[in-house]
Length: 244
Image (cartoon, rainbow, N blue to C red; front, side):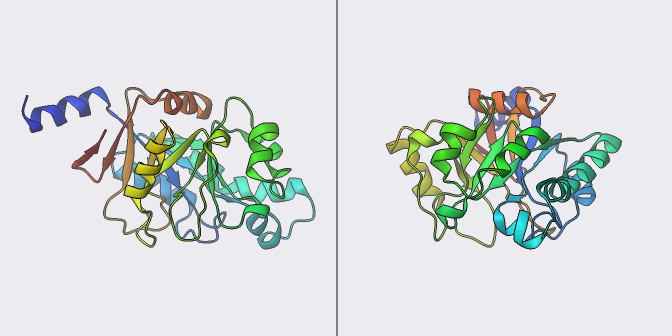
């Protein structure tokens, strides 16, 4: 089989395109695109779904929002997701809830959460001043995937694999060097089999969006987490490069 036919066969076997790492404004302070426009941009790019993984940290939830209570902070945090989801429902794009959590005791490390709902966001809030190890062993729901985001970016340290479900090896944020080769080598050496891909979308103008392609479209965030956990997906950078 020639390369062109092989690519076509892969695209037909994995027809569903999902963005696993996207930020919106204002829930992520570094985001530049409101949730409704993020949904429209991904629909226009031919995607079937997007996961809203806004920053979930003390800096966002407490210092930036300055809430009077926990409920108010979470309400403000989720507002972007709800906006994106309402728009997605209107235009035929699935919008899933995720998060990119940062723990106060571990500096600049970030971790992606898949398999989330509003109740689990509320529960995770109680761990932002803990450690990732504490969250993984005591605070994480069994349905939730805990993935270290861009683990070889500047100022990152690698969490021991026994406290992770996987690695985001392919992170395509144009403003940072994710050191993809190092992440891939490290994951192989440490026998981290689950490796994900994401655009780390923050603003318009990305030339190469990065899709995880799946055989079918999940119904909700928990089904998505199970599909990611299975490893039965491929990566696609732009409209031409397939990653197995």
